[in-house]
Length: 363
Image (tube, rainbow, N blue to C red; front, side, top):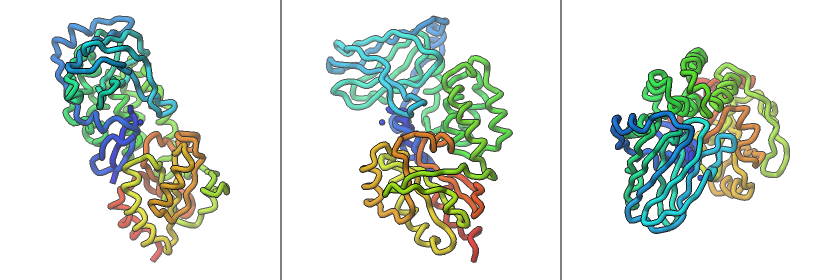
């Protein structure tokens, strides 16, 4: 039921591509990333991995028209694409210089050229080699972090529970492992003691990374929305501007559905969600749709087009306070509450939701 669009755009890693068994939309660039392959040899990586205080990127993209080259990343504070730098390409050649606080997933995009190159940037000498007609198979040489990142032929491994756990537990000295955890923690219902073990297990170098900083904030929020916890109070305007409080729905089983008009997997799931609602809405069950849209008109039009019959609310502030409180930094995600407002399940696959409701709803 979950698909993922990594809003790492790069929008980004917000619907990356359809995720196996889940409809999770983690922001925009994983869709493309899923096709990347690693071509680095360990010898080349080691030769370039001597500690340096800054990075250099030297690129060669054959048959690339002259024009602008953009270096960008996903800003985890805003969950939006952030342009880092730009330069000109001449005869397919370009270069960047700079410094990063810690290894971080970036992308290269090109004026008048479709596609992007995604790679982990760190303070080292990095070479990028590609064909303009095949950016997905670019060679990235000189980044230790990227060597691990691209060692996975199918990068959806970061969403797969078993493979993700392997990355987090067996590559504790890689920022890529903290990056993986950032999405694993949201997608899967991982026991609290396991979450803490993962957090504690990272090497000190990783704990000083940007990804670990954001992972820490996410981890703290997850504790408050774990299964068995009381769902945090909400007071959000509906489409008419009337404030709706979560407490207004007490006494019913409530599925809180986080979504957005721009989220492909969310929109694809809506017809099935409507079916579930129509089947169980007269059995003490309802849905509360919470949008992370920024454009109110697009949000309302999506509600009308998808014919969503349940209560829909939004602060129309994107990844604002509500999504932070619920540890939602990618959509769609959901939380199932009992009549007392206790979280009894989260991120339920649509194929399983009907079965779950048959089991718990009063006959």
